[in-house]
Length: 419
Image (cartoon, rainbow, N blue to C red; front, side):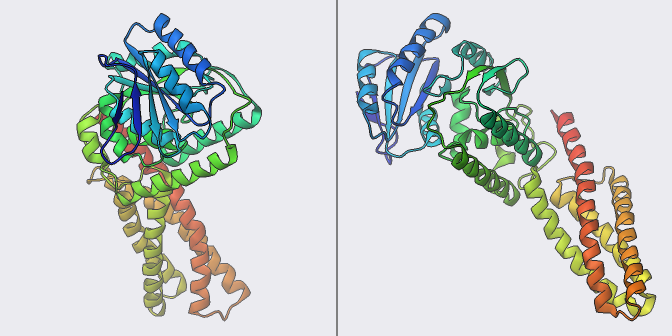
C-alpha cells in the first residue's frame, strides 16, 4: 500500500497490510545501509516479539539512499506485517525522525541506529515510563556510572565535552544528548516537533533542550553500548554542526521567537509559566549577549556622567559617582532583562550584591587612575577615560560572573518551588 504523509510532501509510505495502530513504533533511519539493514530488522523483530508485550512496528526511514537500501526495505515490508517503509526525498536523520514521528499512529514513537550499538535489553526500560504516563520523553545514556560502554577515547572525549558544553551554556540537565536510543509520547511529539528545525544530528539536542525548557519530564535509562568501528559518521563535521545548532537555539531563546510560555502552560508538568518568561535566555550564550548589550549602554552612561562630573568633583570622585549610579541601574536591568528575575522580592539584597561587585569594579578603576597619574601626571580627561574604560572591562567580566551566579541560582530555586 502506498500513501502520502502530507499533501505537500513527495515522501512515500509502503505498508504490507492494513492493521490496528501499534503501541510502539520504532524508527530506524537509514542511508546507504544495504549491507546491515536486513540483519538489524531481523534482530529488532525478534526482540520485539520476545521481550515487548505490546503491539509493535518497525519503520525503516530511508533518507534518499542511492544504493539497494530501499529495495531491501521494501522487500522486508512486503514479507512482514510489522515492518513498513517511509521513503524520504531528502537526506537527514533528524528530518526523517521529525517527519515519521509526527505522522505515526502509534502511542509511543522511538528510534535506534541501524548498527544497533545500544543493547536492546534497554528498550523496555526506555518505553515503560512513557506507557505508564510517568514521563514524556525517554533517552538512553552512555554516561551513567552503571552504563557499560565500549568505544574509542576520541569519541568518549568528544561526547563528554559536548554534554558538558550543553550543561554550562544551556543549563541542560540530561546527561547524554546524542545517544541513538530515544522514545517519546506521540501526542507530545506532534506538539513540539514543529518547533525543532534541525534535520541532521543536532535534532536530538534541540528536541531535548526545548523539552526541558517547556517543563516536560525526561527519563534517562543507562544503556550498554558498543561503538560501531565501521560507522560513516564524520565526527568533526558533526561536532561543528552541533556547535552551530547550539548557537542558533541560544539565539532563538534570546530573541524570544519560540512560544516557551504557551507550550509550558499546555504541555509542561506543572502547567504554569514558571519563574521565567518568553525570551529570557537560560543559557550562558544568550545571557552574555544581553549582558553585553546592557554593558554597552552602561559604559556610555558612565562615560557621559564622568565627563559631566569631572569638572565639579575631580577624577576620583567623578569616577566613584558615575560608577555607583550606573551600577544601580545596571543591576536592576540585568536582574530583569538578562537573568529573568521579576518583582521586588529580595531586590534590596540583589542591589547589595550588585554594589559589592561595584566595589570591586571601583577598586580596579581607582587603582588604574592612581597608576595613570603616577606614570603620566599631566594626563587629561580623555586619557583618564580611556584607562577607565579598559579597567571597566575587567570589572565587567567580574560583574557578569557574580550576577550570573546570584540570579541563576535564584531562577533555579524559583523553578524548583513552582514545580
